[in-house]
Length: 213
Image (cartoon, rainbow, N blue to C red):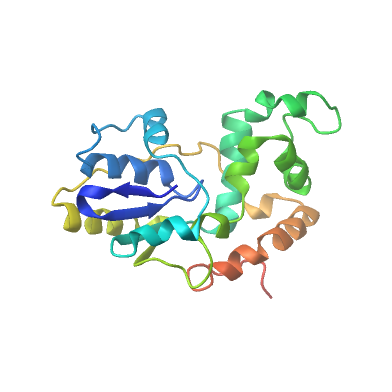
């Protein structure tokens, strides 16, 4: 589903774990069709995150179209720190409760070495850890502008220019805990390198692949 602000002909494709809660909150502030709010539950009710579909995107050819992307490794690490550690969402998976092979409170090495299994058993993990191309679409990326997460201030300026209103960009859904690549076992790093190579290839020009020789 495209996040659309019809009054200003702005269209946004959100990517999970890429500041999408913050961007949606900013868009609500400039959309006269909705009350201004930064409540995260309301933000995602009003502007759900759905996968990219080319046939839907064509309806916005003459709009200003953008997306926000995050370094693939940082994005995947935040799935663990936010969804697994902070929110303990694996404890809400009925399918995961029915089997004993996978713990519901895995350490990061176990989680990333068994990521495919956790994706199958937890809809939340699947949604937040899906490859980026499923949300931003195929290359060449079909946007007027692609912002990195560290360029949110530039996005605020672009939204202000098009709407006449400068929105706040609240930092919603931030992970409290931090996880670094160096803290993971070599086997885990190898698994992440294989998992993320297509991600870095798809976002070439925006991020450098830390696993590349």
